[in-house]
Image (cartoon, rainbow, N blue to C red):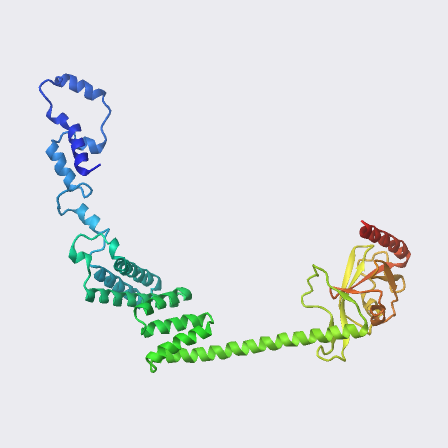
Length: 411
């Protein structure tokens, strides 16, 4: 519906103010008015006005006006749009952004630069698609070439200034994107190369930072800021190189030690196996001691002592192949929770799982190497497991353990 139709409709409804002589008397009108619901404030204000007065009031409203008239409502609507040409608007936002930048208000500075970019980028898009323009005059359809160049110069500055804000805010990817946008406008923008190099250096993209810096110095080899960044790049590259060399050395040492350990196990005939879910050992495992880099060193194993009758356990961090169980049980026994005194060196027997699924009794004075190299046992997930039981209960437990294990394997 057009404004003219709206005003015509309202005029029809308001014809009550110019009634014909055949209308009801004032008494009947008063009675009807008393029964009628109260009008909304907006309609009540116009109920006693003539059509011309209503139309005049409508013309004063910015949404209905057909004639220009200066009033507060008009100025309020004008404030919703930016005044001036795109160049003027973009330049104004640039200046306001610069003011915030001087105060180190990076966030607001970035917002002002963004608004300027949006205004000028919209103009650039219009020029890229001339067939889609909807301007009404020849002057509006075609921006003078010098005006276009000025717009692009301002937009270039807006991009590099916003890149500076992103750099301060550590938005490094956004910084490089804005620098690239500025360089598309002006491939010789030194600030864009500088800020791009800084952002890339901050995220350790050394080769790209070096490339950006080199391109900038190719334009101006005496630029102090770029030369300083070049030195930072060299220093950072050396640091990263040293760190990488150190890491490579660590990995090589680990690999060498792993090969030495594997060779030592193979030479001794010790069988090992890994499961799908090995226990967390916090770096503890089989190793050559005292020197893991010396193949003449002896083997050491983390060991778990299990007390299945009482659901308790102990952990030996390093059980050397030259040692026997008695060397460790001597300081572990008696156990603090053994109130019955069942666990003493003389009263316990020790067992270990076999490869075939059974149990083997382990002599307390037999060296660990002899047990492990027998071919009957294996070290699972780099940990030795030994069962410690009171002699009086050992035989019955061993029989029950074997029976349950056999059932589990057959089932």
